[in-house]
Length: 240
Ligand code: ADP
Ligand code: MG
Image (cartoon, rainbow, N blue to C red):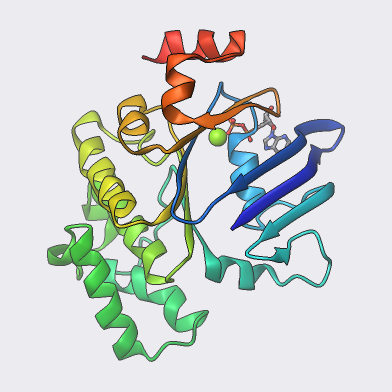
């Protein structure tokens, strides 16, 4: 579904991604871990077309993201993203936040968009808050709205960048439970997280990054049992 071949990414002179070779496959949940600054967010942002790659090939559903002709809006119809800080519009109700992109980008009929939005709001247990403004909600509630908003675009793959890092501890599980439910339903997901309980429960594959490189890319169970790289061993010993 997503394939990196010899991808490099620079910010000015600084190389943030170094020769990345990697695939994310349909139906798989991949958990991406690694120290702060190792390039995890950059990798997700490149997939979504929020950042340009320098060279190499990055295919998203067969579309070459590096090709100048690629329309980034098209990519966002296939790839949903959930950020650490929700990015909801404060002046719109929950329902309006979820229906905005389907109406504007997918040109859906507003009534149809509302029906779909309500199905996804129900899925994240937030239907009763559909007419509320986001400022009245907890971080965990906002993040579940952000997940519903992502789902409403009917993406083939959903990327999560530290979705629980900004949350109060008591609301983290509500968000992780929603993500576990999606994983069980077969959603293709790439999740950057430090939540190792979640990673162990639903992660099919672990990608460990350090200093802009993919250091390990293995079946989750194998990785936990026997991380090869000393940096991965060190990271795991700190985080668990
Ligand atoms: P992670 O998500 O693993 O913490 P990032 O992908 O955010 O790492 O960042 C990787 C490296 O790239 C870091 O050293 C960071 O400082 C740098 N970086 C990230 N975004 C930018 C940017 N817009 N401009 C310059 N440097 C950046
Ligand atoms: Mg990051």
